[in-house]
Amino acid sequence: LSHSKCADACAARNYHYFGRTGEEKCYCGGRTADDTQYARNGLITYGAADYCDCESSDIGDGMCTYQLVDQFDPTTARKQHACVYLPAHDMRKMCYIACRDEEQAMANKLLCKMMTVLGKQQLNKKINKSNDEGGKQLHMLGGEVGAGTY
Image 1 (cartoon, helix red, strand yellow):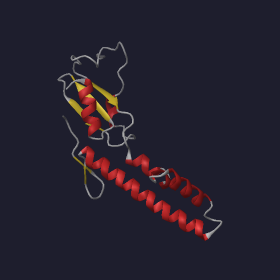
Image 2 (cartoon, rainbow, N blue to C red; image 1 turned 30 degrees about the vertical axis):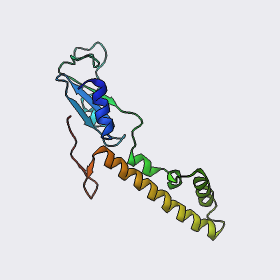
Image 3 (tube, helix red, strand yellow; image 1 turned 30 degrees about the horizontal axis):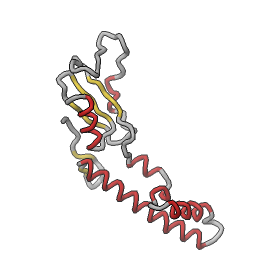
């Protein structure tokens, strides 16, 4: 595959990294942005004996690896406040205010909890949609099933 087709194929499957080899094979990897498996071979500095032009069709024996930006990452998403995932701006604002002031009144505490649950439900929908669109199969305990070459 070409450089751009490889990037598109891996992005469509919700991977965060892609690589190409001299045989023009495309590899996808990294289900999260924190995954550093792609760096296991280290950086190749420009002008080194094993340096190759990754944009050309003649890569040589090496693997050129790239990070895809703007990929949805469930691990990072779960670290954000649940209010972020509410569908309407007014709902998010109400959620933030209720959670900020939850110690002042029981009504705020209750509203914060309800809105947080709604936000987590929206996040779970987004994660499930991301998994479905990417063709990713997850084991029920969270382990990934299959990553591959395209």
